[in-house]
Length: 136
Image (cartoon, rainbow, N blue to C red; front, side, top):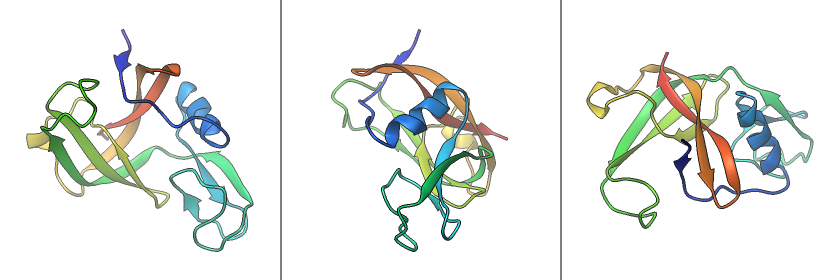
C-alpha cells in the first residue's frame, strides 16, 4: 500500500527525475560545461550558468550530515507525526533532503554512510517511488 505524501513538483525537468525514481535510479543533472551535479532540478548550472544540463544516474551513496524529527503538522494530516527527515551529502556532491528508511533517530549519526532506497508513495499526481536513505 503506497504511503500518502505531500504533492511533488512535476513538469519539465522534474519528470526526468521522477522517471529515474520509478526505475530505482537516483538521477540528477550534471552540467556538461563544468561537471557540477545540480540539485534541486534547475534550468541552468548554479556554478557556471550553463543551460547544458544532462541527467545521469548517481551512485545513491552518501553520508548523513543532519536529521530532525518534526512534531508540528506542517502538511495538515498528510504525514503521521512525528516524522523524521535526513540531510545526506551525496558522493557526487549535492546535499539531498529525504526521509530515513529503517532507521531510528537514536541510531542516526553525523558521518554515517547511507544509500538510497525507494518506497511506493502517492500524491494528487498519482503513484510514485520516493527516494529515501538507509544505513549503507
